[in-house]
Image 1 (cartoon, rainbow, N blue to C red):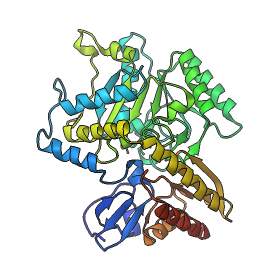
Image 2 (spheres, rainbow, N blue to C red; image 1 turned 90 degrees about the vertical axis):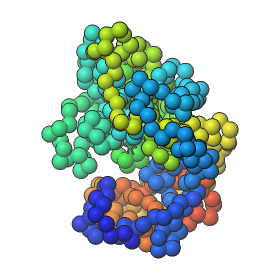
Image 3 (tube, rainbow, N blue to C red; image 1 turned 45 degrees about the vertical axis):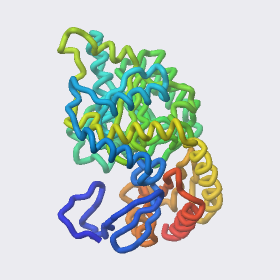
Amino acid sequence: MSGSSIWHPFTQHGLGEPIPLVIRAEGAALFTADGRRVIDAISSWWVTTHGHGHPRIMAAIADQAARLDQIIFAGWTHEPAETVARGLRAIMPDALTRVFFSDSGSTSVEVALKMALGYWRNRGEPRHRLLVMENSYHGDTIGAMSVGERCAFNAAYEPLLFDVGTIPFPYAGQAQATLDALETSCREGAAAFIVEPLILGAGGMLIYSADTLAEMRRICAAHDVLFIADEVMTAWGRTGTLLACEQAGIVPDILCLSKGLTGGAVPLAVTMATEPIFAAHCSSDRARMFFHSSSYTANPLACAAAAANLAIWREEPVLDRVRSLAARQREQLAAIAALPNVRNARALGTITAVELGDAGGYLSDLAPRLLAFFRDHDLLIRPLGNTIYVMPPYCMDDRDLALVYERVADAAGLA
Ligand code: PLP
């Protein structure tokens, strides 16, 4: 365990919980300084797709480090970024012609919101109202929090958050209410609608249908409201396809990608946009440029990792691995779904989730007890309140997967 001055994210230091010191990772396993092998059942916060330390990604970073570490990206470019942009254009929907780099899922969302507002302003039709879905999570910067659910995560910052229009979540049997609310809000005028396609992650792994997603896209298009797909969690095979949007047969106007963009090895994000959105910013008038950057935009080492990830997607049977993991996850889930205390078992692609007992809410005291139980049993799982989800790297083998579900079944007894 480490005793240090570090202030950790989403960690209540006042509880005095131990903070394991990790010294190495490989595939689906983390190794701690005190000699434990811990199974990473949540892909280190949903980023690790192929597995930790994928040799091609590690080699690409090392190779790039020997040549070019960092270069300003405003008005300059470099080969790894160009390779990533070409690679994304080749596998992402054709209509998404432009690639804007940033550093995290939250910044990809900030960029998306700014692109949407810039688009309308530069067209001389300033629209600024943003529509969002209830229970959403889009990150922890001010704009990303503003378009997310108002909850314990952001209560202290409420005075800084801007007003948005919130569409109800399409719980089973209630999709029409969602669509009607979206239609009404779109008719009243809005710049954009931002949504997590098919599954709301931090909001509780809430799944909704591809039909509803397709219909939401149709409504936005009918009212000229830009459709922003936040695929920060859902892309790169997580939901069973490269993009979750594919399952609804839709293409957004703006697409946010991060996490698995580098296979989960190093931070990087992109926001992809259609040509009209780029064109609205492209002019001889400098006042219409897209005013966004950060020091490390398109860092070459991160781009080299992303380029290697794209090569893996082109050359290795990634979707076969995803399908295999998804099928094995469903089998394991079926075995625990009927246990006493286990409710609402659900699965989408490589993600499964259950609720334990009735003690809901992110701040329920069940969560820290579950966290401690999993930590004590050499498992990395972070419950969302009483929701336990499993989201492994695609390389997880049967033995580790069975162990994960055995422990989840044991944890049901704690609720
Ligand atoms: N959007 C979604 C859907 C997410 O799940 C997350 C993070 O979990 C984010 C945005 C924010 O990403 P980051 O933590 O990299 O800023």
